[in-house]
Length: 263
Image 1 (tube, rainbow, N blue to C red):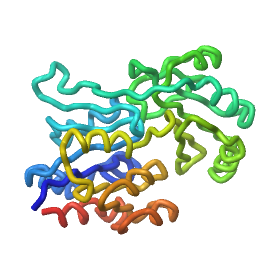
Image 2 (cartoon, rainbow, N blue to C red):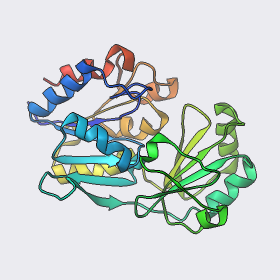
Image 3 (cartoon, one colour):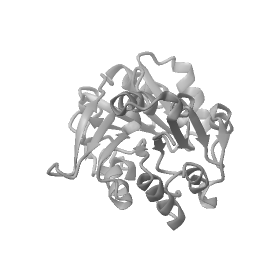
Image 4 (spheres, helix red, strand yellow):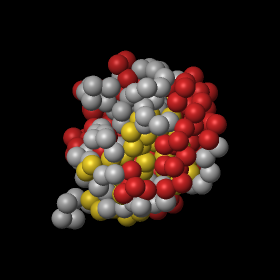
């Protein structure tokens, strides 16, 4: 059996929406690693919030993609912290912030900067940051070099939010709308897929031996990129459409079902 590159989303795939990892899922991930396949985390979470998952799974070596492709990690137990950032994609968020603040005036904004810290307006915090965001002014946010820009609006439905973004015709960025009125913005061409492709070349894995499993809009490019793209059962229709196959929901252990086919 060829060694596979197995790329796993976290929230809604490895863990449920309460952050719980089912024992069978953990067991099958470990089984796949022990079978000699490359297992990589590919998540929208910042690396601070990804490391607990990595450590819980016992992923001591290899690679992971965080911040929707904005950050890539190399895992190595010989390193002082057990990991190092090997790639970071940045962009200038000022024009995007201007456009979004005009179109969605009640939105809250947060940025992951080029050091891995988070800055936010209106005390905006989220578990995916992995660190406490420092409060700053909107003007200070505009001057920040960004890896990831997060936009959240409690005053808009997901559909209204998505429509607002569409009408802006934003250029020079990559973005995905989440389950709620939540927008993730990265630099042009940056996605989980772009980060994973760079790592695939490092690992010398044939494209047809790549497997990706995810459930969100930020997984679309990754599922299209993979030789075998699998959507979780609770994924939106648009995500399922680009997948090669669909497994069970996160509560049904859908990830474990897919991983067993690799053994």
